[in-house]
Length: 235
Image 1 (tube, rainbow, N blue to C red):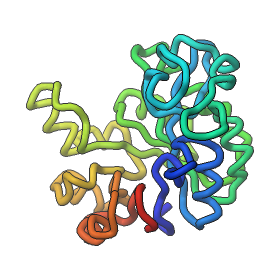
Image 2: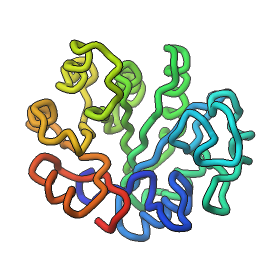
Image 3: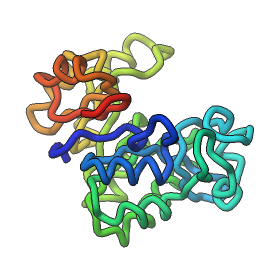
Image 4: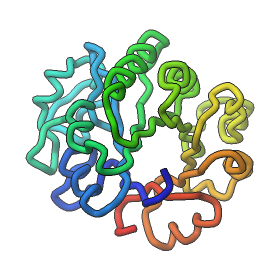
């Protein structure tokens, strides 16, 4: 899990769009681990995209959750010659050649979270490579713990929106949910490091720093994290 730096949304940049198979392949060829984002589709599939809306990274508009997987797999991605890819496409390409870190973008509602849990469980059931799953959503992580007992599971924290109450934000940033979620690793916002929450968590589990955007930042967070999730430079 911590052997190599992890390319954020694949090794994207000039001519390589984020969360595409080409960016994933570039990261693998460079010897990095790979981080990608998955979202739930209207029919219970999983598609590789970061945003809840399609506009920023594709030539379509609207919510990802309002489209079926087949519809989304025909949507062209901006900045490259690819269309959106499914989790099946992703796993077929990686095929165990690199450590894969899958961030699940939690949908609203318990039923949708259960559907996402079932979908990633089906996808990983026959996968023989190294794969970890992580999310910002504590409730989704608890579901994943029950469904994926043999998969490393992680919580993302430290950089979320500050709309919640001060009490809730304190509990979230201090990772007070860990006795419930039993996360195997923590991915913490690099800008927020050092922080007592991940410092305490690191006694029992690895801490990853995200998203590191320069060598200088990588050096700064090195004492506080076991590995980096990076973009924008050669780690």
